[in-house]
Amino acid sequence: MIVAIHQPQFMPWLGYFDKMDQADCFVLLDNVQYKKNEWQNRNRIKGPQGPQWLTVPVQFKFPALITEVGINGSDPWRRKQLQALKTNYAKAPYWPLYEGFIAQFYGREWGELAAVNKASVEWLRGALGIDTPLRIASEMKLNEEPTQRLIDICKAVGADAYLAGVDGKKYMDLDRFAAAGLRIVVQEYEHPTYPQLYGEFASHLSALDLLHNCGPESGEILRSGRKN
Image (spheres, rainbow, N blue to C red):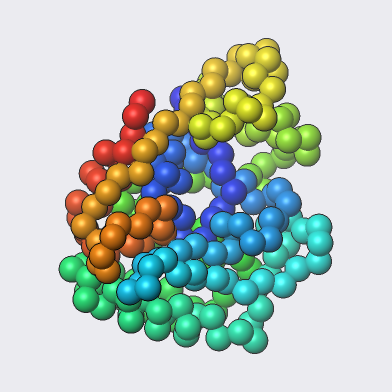
């Protein structure tokens, strides 16, 4: 059984979902320190001027776990993001297919970043045809030391293999995984190209871009980037 473990991101990119699709279980690592200005509270879509950010405004006291990060409710981010998506994707072939969910998602009141990210991940994986079960790290009893925490997660879900990112071997203590009876599988992913609005292709956007442009074919296009 292969497990993949990753921080919950906001509207993640294709490589995130490729890793999920390859795993038998995907664990949202929400009980680690929040990193400002990375992918945990923002992602990119494409407009006429190129990639642009969708950012969830957050409030927290450093250092904070992802589970401790709140959303700044005084910022009209939901209205702004909904308008940005309508403006940039209304002419995309499959905007009508996903418009209902988008409106529902941004129509909700959100108080915690982890909840927003989990909801975006769950919906996008379903739209991409991925049925890998999700587990939440904060619901497990885990050691706080980084390597041991990953090993504990593997044991908690019954995995015998850990699917790491391409840079994983640079920072992982491979001997400790081997001692725990865990083999390491490394993701190899090359971002696929696909029909896209607004001229020259832009990669590493939110999976929202693929879905709005390619609809039901998105899952097959996502998997075409897999090299292992």
